Image (cartoon, rainbow, N blue to C red; front, top):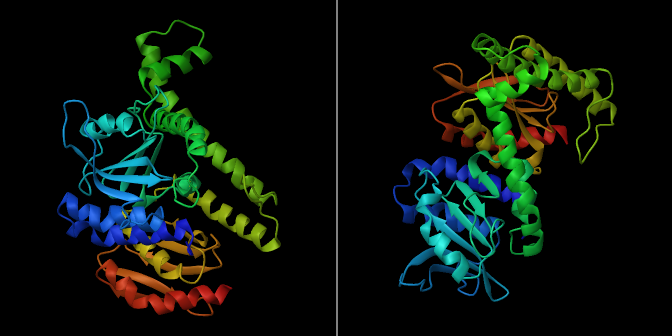
Length: 370
C-alpha cells in the first residue's frame, strides 16, 4: 500500500470523529468504520471472498447457522475472526459468545471484538485453541497510542506473521495490564498497596490510625514520584543532555534548544500543578488538522501540545514550528493560524467542521518550516 499505516489510521480517526454521531445501527457501523479498517488499514480486499468472508458461518455443536461478522483468510486459512458491535457500545467479552465458539472450530488464532472505534485483540495464550478472556492488545482509533502502531502493522496483509504476533502477544497482554494496575494505584491506591508500602517504611504496628495516615502519604508520594521522574528528564534537557528515546536521540543544536525550551514551559506548568485539561473537542480538532496536513508531511510529525490558554498543534513537537492553535476555552471558539513570519491570526469558528475551510492555509504553514 502506498501510504503508511499511521497515515491511514489518522484518516480513519478523522472519519470516526466526524461521522460517529450519525451512525445508528451495527450494520452502519460495519459499513462506515469496520470495513474501512479491514481494507484501508489492514490491507485486505473486502470484496474478495478469498480474503474477507462476511457473515462467516460454521456449525458449532448444536449451534447451527450462527454467523461471525467477518473472517479474514490468509494463505487459504481463516486467520482472524471479527465480531462487531454498534459504535459507542461497550466492549464486553460476555457479549462475544460467537467468538469463543468459532475460535476453535475455525482454527483461527486471532479474534477481534470491535465497536468500530475500539478494538480488542485476543488469542489463545492460556490454553491451546481456547480464546483468552482478556485481550492482548487494545486500541482506540480516535485516540490512538502510537506506540502500538508497530504491533498493529503485524496484522496487515503485507506483514502478517502469525508466529511474530503470537510471540509478542503475551508481553503485550501483561505489560498492558500491569500499566493499568500501576496507573490505578498511583491515582487511587487500594488498601493492599498501601499496606505493602507502609510495611516497607514503617517499623511500628500498623494500626487504624497508621493506615489512615499512610493512605494519604502513599497517594501523595506516588504523585510526587511521577513528577520527580518527569522533572529529572526535563533538567537533563536543560543541562544540554536531552533525554533520549529508545529509537532516536536529540543531537542537533536546534533540537537541543527546542528540548530546553519545552523543558522550561513544562517545568512552569508542573510548578503550578499543571491544571491543564485536554478536552475531547480539542483532540477532535487536532485530528482534523493532522488529517489535513498529513498530505504534506508524515502524520507522526504533527504533534499536539496542550497549554492553559490554548491547544497547540506543532510540527516536529517544536515550539518554533506552530501549525495552529485551537482556542476552545471560551464561548466563542477560534483557530489561530500563522503566516510566514509566525504571526498568529485568530479566526472564529462555531463547529469543528469549519476547520476544513482553512485547509489551504494549514498546508501552506507546514511548508514554511521545510
